[in-house]
Image (cartoon, rainbow, N blue to C red; front, side):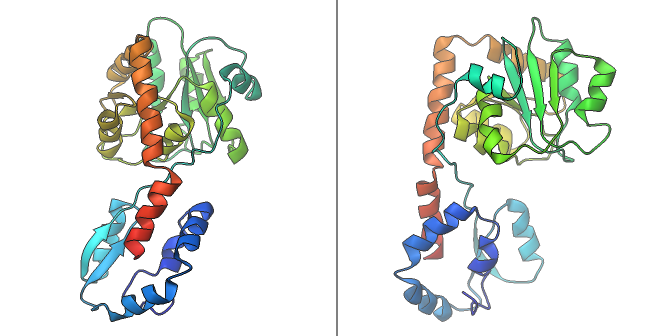
Length: 274
C-alpha cells in the first residue's frame, strides 16, 4: 500500500510480523486488495486508524502530531502446530540428567528482568528444585553466571547462549513451569506466548499486563515484583498443587492457546485492515 500517505503503511507494519502470519493475511486479502485500496483513499485524512504492536507505540505515534481517531493493538499469535515432547527426552536433549521439578528462565537479558530475586527465592524454598537459565546473557550484575558464583547453587543450570528456534521446544517441554520475573512497570514478555504454545504453566511477577494476563486466564501463579519471599511462596504454591489444580491450569493453557491461534489472530488483523 505505497500510496496511503495518511496511514501507517501495511508494508512498514508487516516487517514486524511473523512471516507465516503475513502469508496467512496475504492469502485472505489477495482477492479484494483493489477494493480495500479504493476505500482507503476515500477516507478523510483527519480520521486516522493506527495499528500498533505495543501500547508504547501509541505514544510514539501521537508525538508525531497525527490525529489518530482510534488505535488497535492486535495481540501476538500462538503457533499451536508443535507436538508435545516427552519431558525425559527433552531433558536429555538439553543435557540435563535430573529428576524433579525444573523451572525455566528463558530469553536474552534486558533491563526489565530481575534474575537476582530467583537466586534469593531458592533459599526460602523447602526441598530441592532445579532452575535453568537459557538465553544470551550480556549484563554483569543481572547475569546468572555472575550471580551463581555468589550463591553457589548446584541445582542451577546456565545455558548462556543464543537458543536456536529448533531447540526452544526442548527447553519448554523439559520444564514444569516458567518463571517470568519482570521488574515493576515492565509489562511485556514474549515468553507468555511461548508458554501457551508449549503448554507450560507460568509463575509471573504481578507487573501490570503480565500478572493480569496470568491471573485472568488461570494459567499459573503470580507474585509481587522484586519480592523474593513472595516468589518463593508462588513456587511453593505451584509445587503443592494437587492433580485437579494442575489439570485446571493445563486446560486453561490449551483454551488460551486456541484463542490466540494463528487463525484467530490472523482474522483479527484482516478485520482491522478491511
